[in-house]
Image (cartoon, rainbow, N blue to C red; front, side, top):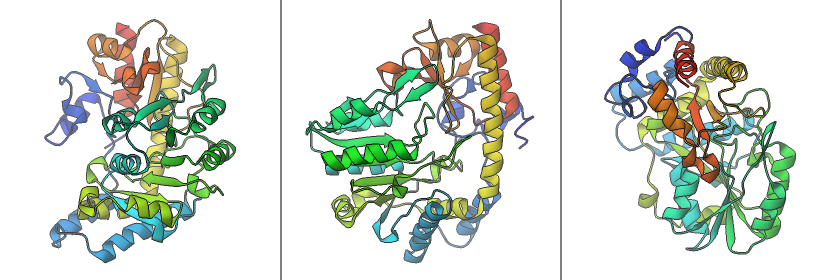
Length: 381
């Protein structure tokens, strides 16, 4: 696929198939730019790893040696690329980052306890505590002309409430693209250590960084308890592979997490394991090209925003392939975009009450498709 020239019509013919949630949600004339699923294929090494497994009787249960290889790839990813130190003995494989979050919240907080989240926030950060009968405690991000900022004073106040047991962090932040620097993350960890608040840190977008550097919780010297969750699924476009890992700050934290029965936690499939190993071991050149392409798309969107003034974007967004669009006079812009321009974005309200007047747009598509979407928006809004 040519990332620059493949048109919406060509992309639709390729991706509107029996497999895709993203491309089958809307009518065929709608450009789907909602769920965090790329339109950019996968690296050949990933495809070959899956093919090799299917042709060599690899559809059974993963071997212990293969799971060890997965753990090694995870540890090496942090050591070599994310500047984090992970103890291989303090890791657990699961099928999904959100599943890991469910397990951690249900393990470390009781019904009625508070879970602190930074809104606007990835929708499962709101639904997971509620479904588990825990209270969502909003630590709203501060927004100004530069973009979004962590409200450390408010966070400290809420962490000091003994009812609030967990700080659930999305780092980098989805949907705003906020990247927490070392100083901020250290302050958050210090507060959590002092208040005995467990940190659950979702780092799934850690490899999708633009114009800055990423800081992992695993690189911070801290006494705070934490569960770090990550997966290759977002950066390498293998969301359906169902493979993730959790890393822990201590043996005591892991032991509590491990109290959840193995069969309730689930186990990654061979397909997910070999795809993840290939992604982290062999697909770095592919990812570099994808990041360059998405960076170009981010620049196209920003230029469009500044020229048309139809919506604004946070200036300090430096992560993810997701854009957080702010509209001044439209409380439900996602509906307007869909009804008038036939562009399908994620509703801002799904990210919390502060998401009104917002929509989230997925930029991991071809340049021609993005330009078609922007042309429709300009012509119809």
